[in-house]
Amino acid sequence: MREAVEAALNKVRPMLQADGGDVELVEITEDGVVKVRLQGACGACPMSQMTLKMGIERYLKKEVPEVKAVEAVM
Image 1 (cartoon, rainbow, N blue to C red):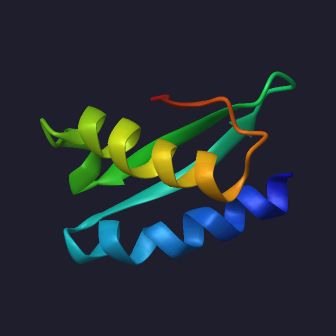
Image 2 (cartoon, helix red, strand yellow; image 1 turned 180 degrees about the vertical axis):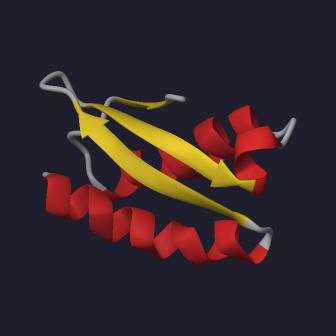
């Protein structure tokens, strides 16, 4: 599952990098929660929660059905 999540993140990463940000995979829990760290401009952006839930989480759930949620960690 980790490889599938990494591959999906690699597909959304260019969009984040275009705005000066990035995303790092930190952990995948046994119950399907993907924990990521938003970096660069994404880490301090007031819209980061929307990016996380409506962008990254939505895409990961579509690409990797085992993903139940995506959470940001510091």
